[in-house]
Each structure stands twice: as C-alpha cells, then as structure tokens.
Image (cartoon, rainbow, N blue to C red; front, side, top):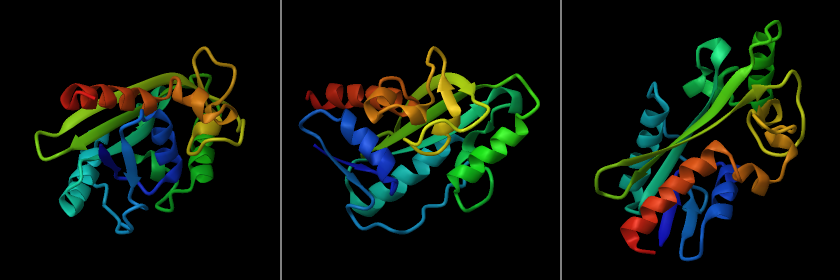
Length: 194
C-alpha cells in the first residue's frame, strides 16, 4: 500500500520508514517534489495535522497522513506546544528554540514536560486522528547529537539519556511519534486486512 507522509523533514520520514512493515511504501513530499509551504494556522496540533493532510490528499489523491508535534512544558502552561517549531521565531531554528526554552526554565526546578504527536489521516472518508505522548523532563543543558528539535534537552522518565543520545530504534521504542504511528498502523491493518 502506498502512503504519503505530508512532510519535507527527512528525519521524521526516516523514523516512520523504520516502523513500517513490509507491504507499505512511504513517500514524503520530497519524493513527489512538492515544495509549496502549507500554512499551519490552526491553534491545535490536531488542526495543523489535518490542514496538511487535506491539502496534500487534495493535491495528489494518495492516502495521506500528516503529523504535528509539540513539546508541552508544565511550568509554562503547555508552551511551546503548537508553536514548538517556531518558538524562537519564524526561522524554525532548533538550537534557538531549545536555548529559549532553557532560558525560561533557568531558575525553576519544575521541568516536567511531554512530547505529544497527533497524526491526521485522510483517504477520502472521514478523517482519523491518532495521538502519542511521552513524558519526561527538560535537562539543564544539551546532551547528545542525534535526533532533531528538542531531542538534546528532553529526557524521558526512567531514562538516563536524552532523546539525542540514543539510536533511532531506541527512540522509536517509546517516542510520541512512534506511539501515534503504531495506533495509525493498527487502523490501517484493520481496514486493509494486511
């Protein structure tokens, strides 16, 4: 089955490809040479995921899913949340986003946070949503050089390493994106009898 992931982020596409069983072919926006920007104007992760999935499905007719993820910090009342990618400004600079977050938490011991992903799937029927959450803490400094986004400053509860200090396979064992995607795969298996 051919699936289209509405992302140009090859890090995210690689994480998902590693989870796909045989019988599925995953395409990204890069594979179909789609370079237009899809404005993420919704105020929720669900809304932004749906905007992207609908836009690409209407453009291609290929069953499409999109995700939106956010880091939700308890001390900051859930921020940066839906604005995680642009927390430090419109340039989507991972390092600057993390540095801004660290500066806001500099003088507090309250560092609990969660990564949350919502996947929206559009195939011409009613849109479906799938959610994954991983809880952890925000470190006081960068650790590791794997991964992307806030991975170097996020340490899942029960771990002694950040997401940026482990392999993709280790991260996928508990990550928010993989948890949401596993729910999505269960849906595809049930619907397609694969």
